[in-house]
Amino acid sequence: MKKLLLILLFAVSTIGAKAQSIFENINLAETFFAALDSGHYEKAYSFFDATVQEKLKPDNLKALWQQTQARIGEFKAIDGVQNKIKDDFQLVIVNLKFANDNQPFQLAFNKANKIVGIFMLPKSMENAYRLPSYADTASYTQKLITIKSGKFELPAMLTLPKDSLNCPMVILVHGSGPSDMDETIGPNKPFQDIALGLASKGIASIRYVKRTLIYQNEFKGAFTVKEEVLDDALSVINYAKTVPQIDPNKIYVFGHSLGGMLAPRIATLEPIIKGVVLAAAPARKLQDIAIEQNNYFNTLQPDSVKAASKTILAQSIKELNETKAFNEKTAKQDSSYLGLPVSYWADLNAMDQVAMAKKLNQRMLIIQGGNDFQVSKQDFDIWEKGLKGKRNVDLKMYPMLNHLFVFVSEKGDSRQYATPANVDQTLIDDLASWINQK
Image 1 (tube, rainbow, N blue to C red):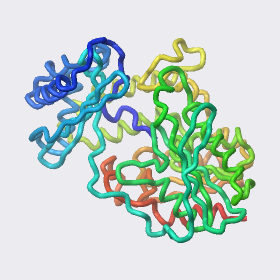
Image 2: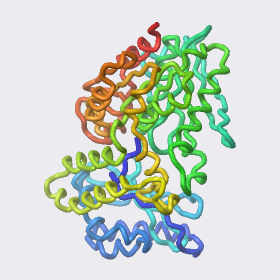
Image 3: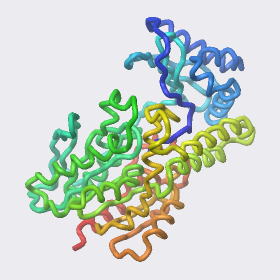
Image 4: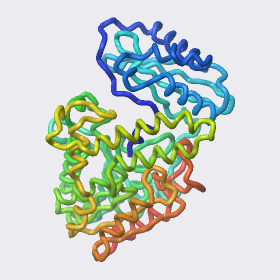
């Protein structure tokens, strides 16, 4: 799911009409980081647009810079700069070299050559994705298809066991934020792993590009998870019914993170599906998940940095708690708050996914990794308690797996996503066994 407020990230503003200057903004980016390195936080603060300055103070920049150096060492040099244009904004990517590692930052400039967003980018991966050992490439075929969802067309991959007939079908539904069909993060492709692993065991699947990745301009006003997730998931299910090789009475939805949170809602809207898998699915509000993440990451900081982070943490928690009061009657449903419109928060606030799941007759499998720092065992326990006694529900905890259901030795942080790894084979085996049960 999306990591809210883990790094300074601001809604992009459209203030300013001055034509962008590529070289000017690159020079501004270099000067900005030079100011941070020299401790001139007031000067660095002056580079931001006024709309951002309302939310950001020099002390916040100081904390960000100190946290970065505490994690990967003293700043050494700028090790490369690149840029690209996106809509009315110029994105300048600056690769910074520190004593122990490199870290790229992305700055978004508006037409007035002011910074309207800053965040860390995943580091370039030297190691590529590795095909999982359990993928029997001779046992399945893959075909690129197009899913029509209203006025939108989404690229998708249909994976079928060879010589398949009346086989089960799994629809893979993403977590928060823009995502490709493989739910790629760094060198990891968990949805591809799952698709290939299941196909090797006689189970078909469809994975598709999330609408937010290729139709970003459609998400500038008021919207909810209906537009982000539900409409497309239902369209994929409708497509799955038409695939000759599958049994339309054996369609399952595998929802990961936000997708798992919404899986009971999908099953309510499309009762033809036989079952849902809730993988690392929040049972609580997203705001509570984000607050827990922020608190957890703060515990990982050196003591010398925790004090500087205190103000940022308190403000983040305050803003997240404020969104809990949003409902469909809140004014300005299309106004952005913490990067999402009021309508989005209001929609999720009105939803009780555990109560919804309790009413379902379809089969449910709830799985959780014990080393997941994004969605914790607390959510798994809530699901278990809320669905206790329902015969159509199975639950399993995997103590050593993370949010991507990859084996890791400790809970850790997002740096673990930089290491090439595959979804654990035990989970693939358990998932296939559960789907194939009579």
